[in-house]
Amino acid sequence: MQPRTFTALAFVGGVALPLTATAMPAPWILAGVLSLVACGLVLCSRGVSICRGSPVGQVFVRHAGLVGSAFAAFLAGNLFLALALSARLDRALSPEFVNTDVTLVIRVDSLPERYDDRQRFEARVLVCLSCRPGVVPGKGFPKRIRLSSRDATVAFQDGERWRVTLRLKPPGGFRNRGSFDGARHALATDLDAVGHLRAEPAAVRLSTSRGRWLARYRSAVHERIGAVLPTETAALVTALAIGHRAAISSAWRDTLEATGTSHLLAISGLHVGMVYAWMLLLVRFVGKVLPRRGRVLLGLLPLLAAGVYCALAGWSLSTQRALLMLLVVQLLLSRRRKSDSWCAWSLALVIVTALQPLGVLSFGYALSFGTVALLIILHQGGSQGRVQGHGQKRDRKRGMGAGSFLARIWAGLRTHAWLSVL
Image (cartoon, rainbow, N blue to C red; front, top):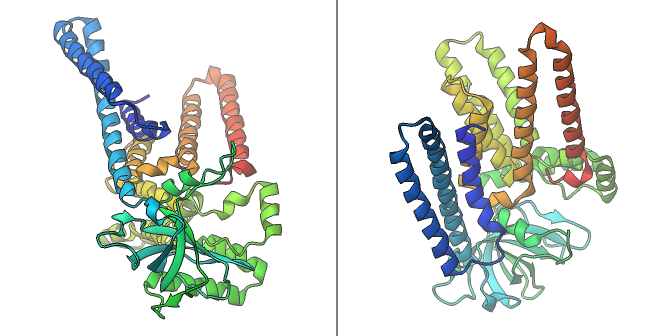
């Protein structure tokens, strides 16, 4: 394992390891651990100064530097996690607002999911009209919430502003072992509370226009697809175009789950990468007839196309992660610097984790980086087999066959229904 990769994994460990604890450790435990770390650093520095000239001392110095950089990365991960959790604590739902009527001014922040007898959408709290002075969204009150309404006749639209009366509660789920963890999902997806609208007083639309231009465009695309295509086809196209899967029927969902292909309709790195790859091929084809200066500007179009697609998909956590990884690839390509796969993987891992510390709680985070790491390992194994001598062709074929077999196993697992979270 390369030192950069080891340091990147230590940074991720500093973010992910504290999240596995069910409670904060006692102060004396923290003090004891810090004391042991300080003693270890002192002993390492003394050992380096004493054994610097010997061969054993040189090995010790090299490994001591690696351990020191990994420990610094681990502490940096702790710092990023502490900052993220501090910001989320300011937005936590106070017990005084749980299951009590609260009047808010909200902005619809997603395309509503409409069903026969209810609808559900995400919203951003703008003003709390019934809160005491000093309590504002983001400081003592939730900022991003998910709401449901039993009145399916009220036409909420993405980007509109409403005055509503509702009841909130902390996000959560059933405590059954192996069931969906709603609290973990809410923490990973930046959701502060969930609630339902009250029938009285009725919700009042404050803004007839749909606010943001992106919300208007997504709504227009949704309506246009529904107008020109049959219902079932429109539901699938809408899921792939703007990431809205609420219109998919139960029969289609059962079919996708039975065939293990439901993850193909969840926009993730696969879809964003395809948009980037197709645009990159187009740019390279067109760039052959353009001057050098035009090629540089044209090289930004693949990343721009991927960003536009992520915006149409609603900027979900998986699309943000994929776009950040593509940004790292674009940066390395623009610098024309030869870099191995592990270096790019480590850089993307650190950047994504630093910008989304709580994203490590999502299953897609581990599956995305784990899949890429496995592909790098299999590719390097195949590359090493190709550079062997002529007398080792049989071993090379066996190695490549084993790598292909493992790749097929992994592909089968990824397409299995229980991994459809991607």
